Image (cartoon, rainbow, N blue to C red; front, side):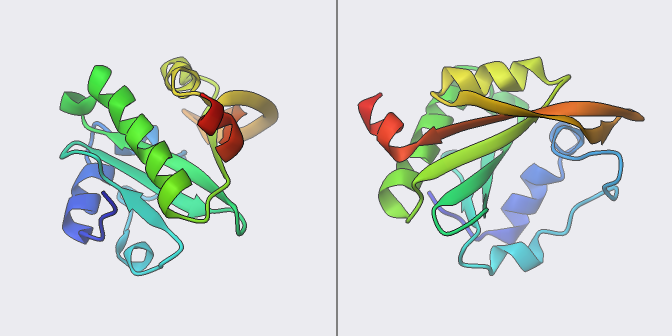
Amino acid sequence: MRTRDAKFIDAVMNHPDVYPWITDDGCPDAMSIHDYVSNDKIYFISPNEYTIFALFPVNSVTWEIHTCILKPGRGKTATESAQKMIEYMFTQTPCKKLISWVPEPYKHVLKYALMNGLKIEGCSKKSFLKYGKLQDLTLVGITKGDWSCH
């Protein structure tokens, strides 16, 4: 499930149906992921051929989720993929908490996070520049303990 296939990761993350959703106005036209793939603390989880979850450490027990799903992997498949990623992170890594920052206009992304057991934990006002406008970011998260009770 963990992958280091830079070509595959790059193809999903830089796909025109994905990249605009994972970047802000200050990002380049494409992301270079090659430096990230060799970092042992960064996890690229791929439960299927359409999905990459890029998980970056915040500290020794918390990882931030960046979700990248091509159109054929959305819907029911996306929910199954998220559950597999969460299980992997809580059973195969030192992770005790997963978080994600969801931009204000991405209501469907917030709904997806909540459907997968993450809870709203806070809001960072006007902290994300998208479409030339400062947007709020909603913080969502789940702990290993909450997941194991789920």
